[in-house]
View 1: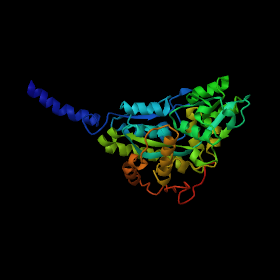
View 2: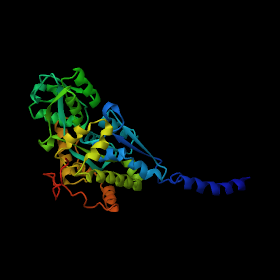
View 3: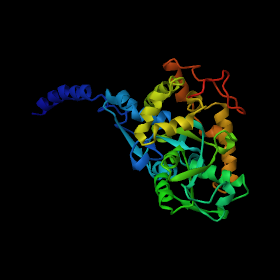
View 4: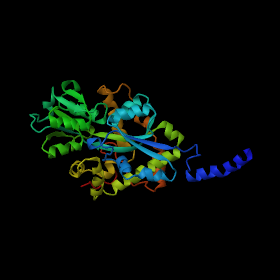
Length: 364
């Protein structure tokens, strides 16, 4: 009987491995977990506005790892950046997009993740008020109920924006509120104002709100940034799979960049998040899809993050500082760019101007 079972095992094990290549491989994960800091309109588990979101919307990671039998799981968190950090602390996530402030807080707090690629630079912020409000400018926010999601990139941006008119967090009644809740509160009159993204445009277009401030066209230091991160546990244990994730991200980023002169397909895809086509078109007008979403951690990204680290410390949003270069691991990005022949497709941006060697064509 024992001999019979040994013979049977000789046939069954190769069969199982052939049917599911990852089954018997200790060097392959069974699941890849991607977390995203935010949700779409109405709390739907879909977002737009980045190459990471595009990778999700087009099912690129699922297709990449389908042949290996590796499950890809996406999680979209209403708690945004702080919730993503908590997930890293509990070892529940392998990769994520993360805005500048939460990634700075997480790294300074000792979370074990690394910056593998840039996700975006120059994210604009807007301030909306109810349509019948007497608030006309930032100075009028003193003492008012103002929503922002604390601990996020938007929080750091909001504090810096208030500072431009001599206000601090303590000069307004800053209320911690996610974007969907804040938009609803603006409509019902339970808020005096809200910091947010271009999703606020839909309230304006419905006549429920007015936009009284935007960073668009102003000082880039008032805008936000984000990174694509990987947990140190995963990237050390599965370097080949990490490189494949980066290759897939590059495919998504190139698809967006290739639409530079005709971005309608990109905007249309992103509307699955619940944001309107017109809002996206307005938000991205005059800006380069290719270079705002460049995956390169180039001198511009390094300079912006080192600046944001110091700003977060100065404003009391983080206790410890660090050198951004110590946070970065571009080895997977470099290998992925080479493997799919995209070296030189994105040009490094100047640390001061943010412009690449050749001026890109702006999105329309």
